[in-house]
Amino acid sequence: MNKNFSFIILTFNEEIHLPRLLNSIKDLNAATFILDSGSTDNTLAIARNFGAEHKTNSFINHPKQWDFALKNFNINTPWTIGLDADQVITPELFKQLNGFNDEKHLDINGIFFNRKNYFQGKWIRYGGYYPLYLLKMFRTGIGFSDLSENMDHRFITPGKTVTWKSGHILEENLKENDLSFWLAKHKKYSDLIAEEEIERSYKFRQQTLKANLFGNPNEQKAWMKKIWWKLPLGLRPYLYYSYRMILQLGILDGNTGRRFHYLQGLWFRRLVDKKIKILKSRREGK
Image (tube, rainbow, N blue to C red; front, side, top):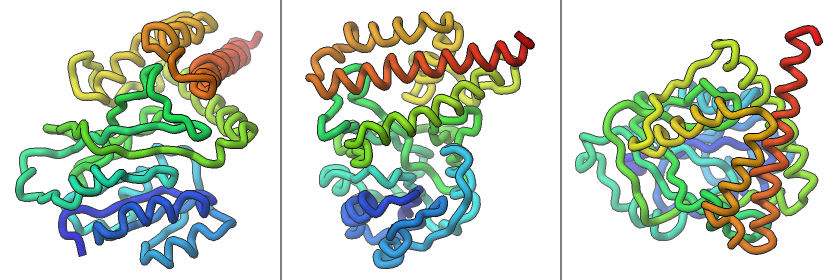
């Protein structure tokens, strides 16, 4: 059994994705823990077939689900790797993990992986989507789930981190080949984000991370969000979409990629802002 790290995976009706992920990591011989949120398909049977330990917890949002997972699985390795069910690791990343030795990384608490995101079979290369570094590997008991947001999940770890630029996580949700699935999911997400931003406007929420344009990838993103929250509602989706399509070259992503940038960068952001305005009106009694 791998003595350096273990995997935790979140699932919900992932029979289409889970075998793909588990096959990509099985030869690392690492303990695997799956937190499910009530699957009604063959997800848990697949988990058992691969020898993974699993628990079930009702889903509220991704940050809280990850928080539960980190606190309720007995991880005995010095490192934990958190993955989503619709991700896989590439052979290059597999090689890096296979050669990983904790004794050579004693001064490090976290490792950022590079992600490639796919939408309906298309790699989203531009529009700020690549390279995109995610903290996915962290010291057990030191890394934690950031609960300051409802939707945009991240792991945080104090101390020194490094970024692995070679090797990738590939992320592709095959359910999103049905656009109605994507739309329904993001309508739910828009509710969570609107509620969060209302709470933030009343100082009920504060950023966990220190915003730093020159810091690690998480701190850079915190800096960008600090600006985002100050931009005018209704205008900021158009500013963001223009920035993404022109300055970040999203227009080069082809028809499928441009459709993705429109949906995720404009349609979704407009929906969030509309819901924020509705919630504000209700609070103000208008």
